[in-house]
Length: 218
Image 1 (cartoon, helix red, strand yellow):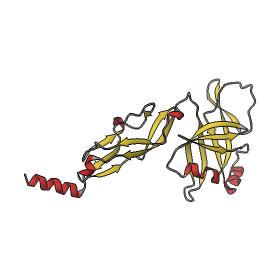
Image 2 (spheres, helix red, strand yellow):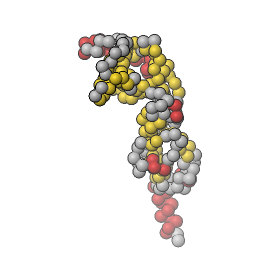
Image 3 (cartoon, helix red, strand yellow):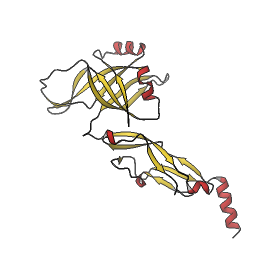
Image 4 (cartoon, helix red, strand yellow):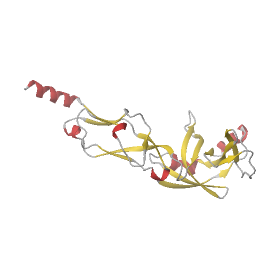
């Protein structure tokens, strides 16, 4: 997975008025989830933008509220590729991935971004683009190759996540499918339903006509 470098400012005023003013300046409120796990009561010092979110009795995680700019995240958001992000905030580097993006329902501008901090010990669930390669046997027979799932959800250490999931379709016959359960990638756990169809070679009218003509000629 490619690494995208980004710098953010900590956000300390979380009120509605401040958030509205932020967006008017072309900035995006965001939060880094999945930070350090700490024991309560917490005796350390929180940096600007950080807060404690209790997850169970006596335990909390540190999240960080930040501000990003539309221009800085454009390449990260509006692309079919996936990235890990080396994010610098409070003079510290955090390795994160995109968890969720909230868009304006009308203007399609970004309202909020959720980021998830990752490391080489904790697996992360993420969607990865699918790329088909090869020349399907079914297409040679007159069928049409159809991609039903452009992305698949996988779970892995972020350093093991590929930029694309490459699927070879050379042996895919007419009317046949490749399902999630047919796929195996080293170091990845597939999270989609095993019977979900990733791609198929569909019968076209021409293929049906040829099959009917061949049957009639027998």
